[in-house]
Amino acid sequence: WTSDDTDAVERQKIQYGTSLCYPLSCMGSHVSAVPNHQTER
Image: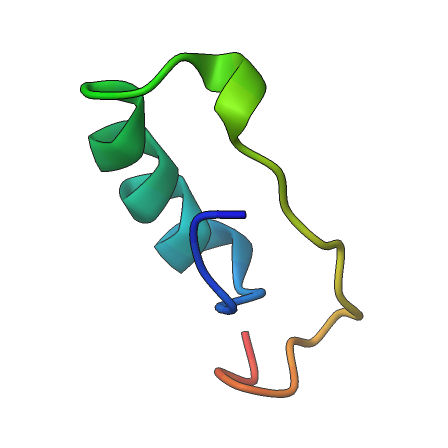
């Protein structure tokens, strides 16, 4: 996966940047609870 950050908004930015250099099939992610325990979003 591209990051340990489980916040969807933050992860979207990271995955967009990664997609410029790597195919989408190389990325994965985890789904977290709402609200997120890291950002309280």
